[in-house]
Image (cartoon, rainbow, N blue to C red; front, side):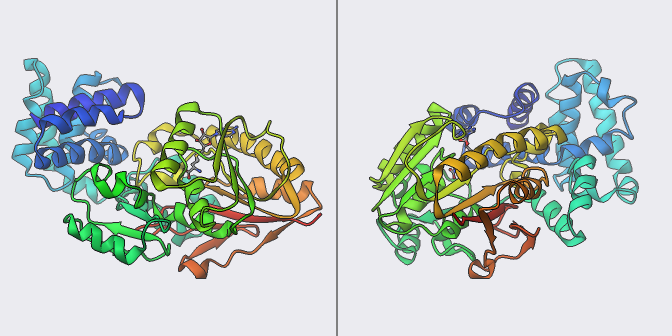
Length: 427
Ligand SMILES: C[S@@+](CC[C@H](N)C(=O)[O-])C[C@H]1O[C@@H](n2cnc3c(N)ncnc32)[C@H](O)[C@@H]1O
C-alpha cells in the first residue's frame, strides 16, 4: 500500500531529517513505475508542503505541536493530498487505513474531513510564505536583504521541482549527439538555456544512472547553476588549478573537461567517502588530470596555483527545489557558523595558495548575506592585494542580483539560487 509506505518514509524523515537513497531503492525493486512515482510524490510533496500543511492544520487541531507523531504524520500526509488536487475521498479513506488504532482513525478521519470543509475559507487568509511553504523566519530574512522580485522568484522556485539536467561530457561526445543518443533510448531531452553543455531531460521517473550512456561517461548529472561556476573560473589547458572543496566532483570534472584533460587539478575534501566519488566520477568520464587529497582546505599548503575554485560548504538554502528537506533542517545560526568556516578557507586561498595575478572563484548554493556578501566585504576590508572582477552573467543568459562584489543568480525553470564572486590577487 503506497500511502502506508509513504507514511513509513515520512516517519524516517522525522527522525533523521533526510531520507536515505537506499530506502527508495528498496521500494524501487518492489513497485511498478507508476506506484514509485506516486510514492515519491507523496513523500517529497508532503515535505515540500510541510509549512503550508501545518499552518492549515493549526486551525483544526487544538495543539499540533503536542499531537502524537503517528497521528500528526497521517494528518500531514492526508492534508498534502487534500491541498494538492488529489481525489479527496481517496485521500481521506486511504490515509485513515494506515492507522491501526480505532481512536486515531476517528481523529484523522474527522480532521481531514474538516480540512476539506474549511480549506477554501482558510486559503483566503493564507500569508505568502504559507502559499510557497517556506519558514516565516526565512521569508523575513529574504525581505531584509533582497529586492521584492528576488524574494518572489526565490519562493516560487523553492516550491517547485527542479527538472533533471545533465552536463554533456565533451571529452566523449557533443550536446547534439547526446540528445540523439538519449532519444535512441526513449529519453526526450532539450538543450538547456544557460550552460553550453546543459541538457534538460524528460525523465518520467526513470533512473538515468542505470543507462549505458551514464556508465560510459557521456554525461554528468548536474543542475545548471552548478554548471556555470567552472565556466566563470575559465581554466585553460595546462594550468595548475585547485578545487578546494571538490566532492563529489561535479565542478572538478567540468574544469577538467574545459581544460581538455590537460594540466593539473588538485581536488581537496575532508570527507573520504565523498572524495572517492570524485575519483569514480573522473574515471567514468575518462578524466586523468585530477589528484584527490583528503585534507581540510584551511590547512592545505602547496605550491601556488593559477586559479582556485572554492565551492564552499554552506547552509544550502538555495537547493530546496532539489532537496525540499533543506528548509526544515537549517536555521539562522547556520548562516553564521558556515560563514566562519568559509572565511578560513578564503583566507588560506588568498594568503597561501593563489599566485599573484591568479583568480579565485567563490560560490555557494545559499542566499545568506553572512555566507556571501558579508564574507566578501570582510575580504575587501582585510586585503589590499585583491580586486573583485565583475562577472558578465549575460554570457550565460542569467539575471543576477549584484551586491557590489558578486552575484546572486535569480532562479528560473532550471537555475537554482546560487552566489558567485570572482576575485583577482593583484600581487
Ligand atoms: C558544496 S559541496 C562541493 C560540491 C562540489 N564542488 C561539486 O560541484 O560537486 C562542499 C564540499 O566541501 C567539503 N568540505 C567541508 N569542509 C571542508 C574543508 N574544511 N575543506 C575541504 N572540503 C570541505 C564537503 O565535504 C563537501 O563535499
